[in-house]
Length: 430
Image (tube, rainbow, N blue to C red; front, top):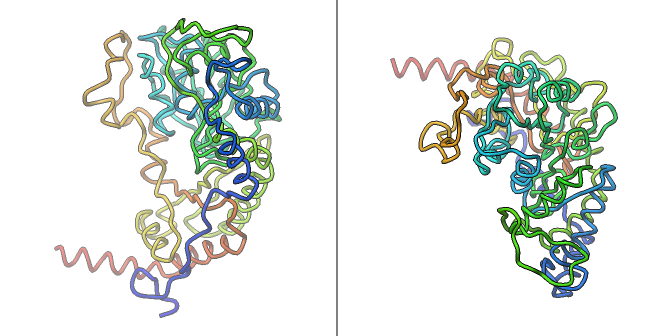
C-alpha cells in the first residue's frame, strides 16, 4: 500500500497542508495597530497639508515604491485593477481606440481598456516566458492602436527590447503590468521602469501584500497628475491649495488606498528582495529536481533576467509521461500536492467578448476578433503544456519542495495504475 497511488487507496505522500501565505509578523501587526490607535484610517480628507494626496503612511509607501524603482512618481491605488484603469486614462487612450494585450493574464489587463470604452486586442505569447510576443503584436496592430500592455507573467520579464522597439515604431504608449513581477529585472532594469508607466499589485497572494492595493510608477509628471485625479473623483488637488474646491477636471473614481493598507505596504516592501531571494532558491531546487524526469521540463529563466517567481510554471509532455496532464494533476492532488493544469483560459474566450458585449464596442470601428485559434501558443499552454505550482514561496521550505518532488516521482513511477484504471473505465462505458 505504501507504493500504491493515493488516488487508488494508497498512502498519501503528504498529509499536511503547505505553509500558509502571506507572512504577517509582529512588525506588520504593530504598523496596522499604530494606524488604528491614531484614528486616521483614510486621511484622504481636506486638511492642511493633505488635500487628497494621502496621509503620512500613504505618502511614505509611495515614496518607498518610487525610491525602490528609481522613478520620480508613485501613485497608490486600492487595487492594481484600479491602477491599470488609471493608466489607460493617463496615457491618453480614448474611446474606440485599441490596446494590445496578451490573452494569458489576469482579466483586468484587458478589461481596464473596456473600463475606458477602449478595446482590448489580443496578441499571442512566447512559448518560453509566456509573455507578449512582439511579432504577434505586429500582426494585430492597426490605425486604431494607442497602447500596449506587456505582462511580466509568473514573475519573468517580457522581452522589453523587442516590445519597446515595436511601440516606438507605431508610436504607442507602453503600460507594464508588473502584478506578478515585483523586483524582477530585465537586463538590469526593474520591471515597471521601461515603459511610460508600470503597475504593481499588492493583493494577499502577491510577493508582498497590503491585503488589497496597487501602485502606478512613472517618470512622467503628466501621467502621475492624471492618475491622482482618476483615483480621487477627477478632482485637481494641489498640495499648495488652501481649501478644497470640489471641482472635477475629468471623470474619476474613488480608487484610494487606506492608511492601514499603506502601513502594511511600508513593512512588506522592506522585505521584498529577501522574500524574492527565497522564492528563487525554492524554484531552482524544484527545477533541479525535475530535470531528467521523462514528461517534465522546468521553465526557463533567461540569463539577462531576474525572476520573481510569483508562480512556478513547468512543462508537461503527455507522450513522454505516458499519462494525460489531467490524470497527472489529479493523481498529484491525491498525494497532497495541489497543482494547476494550465493558467487562465485565454481571455478572449470569455463570454464577455461574445455575449452581451460591453458598451465600449459601440464606439469601435476596428476589426478585433475573439475567435478560438487567434492565439495558438496561449491556447496550447492552457490546454496541454503548462502545470503551475503556487506554493514555491515563503514560508515553504526545501523539505516541503522535496515532498512535491517525491509525490511527482511516485505518480510517474506508478503511471500504469492510472493507465489501467482508464482502460477499465473505457471498457465499462463500452
